[in-house]
Image 1: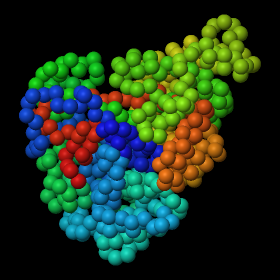
Image 2: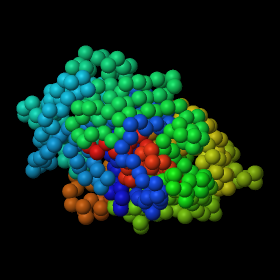
Image 3: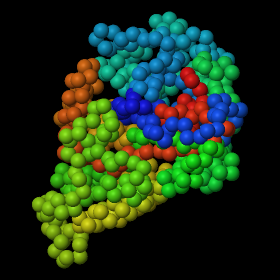
Image 4: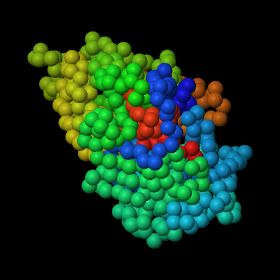
Length: 531
């Protein structure tokens, strides 16, 4: 999908959760161009990045957020992937052919590929990966739900049969990691399997991992099937205060906020890179737990009450794009600019709530229902989005809705979100454009810690349009379907995208200047190797 000039729709839940990076997009801005006169190094012996425990880097041991999956992708490979422009590119499969009816894909596997323990990679491993991951679901990603059967034509060729045509099937394959049969075939508790488990075909081998300290060490795989890794060793190390750690040379790249950017501007020692991303904060409504939220007009009132531009200005310091009620980013090629936008209007919010019977009977500023009960909701957030929650609380209070904030650590928030244990919830992740979680189609919207089937929301027309666009190969017709889908979603507001983030990163080109201009994640595989 386009990352440099345009953005492409991200519509598959699985693709989105596992790829927090590969399917994220970054748009190069002027700041992403060279801002240092220091000659950059395109290779390095060692790169150090801020650590933190994101789980053991296997499909079953990782923590289901981007940092976990990106570390796993240093070790493991998929059959195919997508490049910065959304084009399907080879990984362990070198070529493929789709049947006329769109139900069978024949893929030729790359020859002479070895697992990290020198055993050969063959079609048996692909079939095993399918059967094993169907029995034991990975933490995130895995073989697409649409797959009906995987069979070997010969040692280097496989056929994949799917249930129904899906124009995104090959891109969805990007989330399916191959695992070695000879390592995993006798493992019955994959989520706790760590002994000799991190054996893949990827560009790096895991040599050290400490859950307690959140440290990792990856070394280049000398037998990697692709191009030679540009960095020989990648270390993730403790960095309590990342800005200080970067300035003291303890880590080699760091994300920065606009308020400290001046420390690095006009300084030849540093290069600043800027990205526009699909990583978004979203406000989720649990309509199953709070029936009030099942009213479309009620959700529309919240959309009018929340001042998304102010949140961009105050919380993101201007380094973000206000969210679209139709979910897709304004730069997405399928974006529908005519869908309702809900410009901030507290008066309109109050009018909608009044029309539903909520009145401020005792003039304390908080609306009540006909039984005199206060219109009050608990808002779950993590510590990192607490300030965002506080401003949203103020916005809703102005419209007569009381909010009680419950701020917890990220993993607790993720668990509560996955289990539907919330009334309102702020969650954020790279699948900021995911539409599948709004559907009730079998196999879609599977709950994870970063995305979840929207609780209590059901619209057959959304299901119908989502399914239709999956099958539509004509780009023009697909855009029409996506436009209709966004129109409904924006009108009904089953979730509210608050804003899509931008990202700023700074590094020293004299240490290493091979950082990708297409993805902002410092731990992304594309920073270290050209597959």
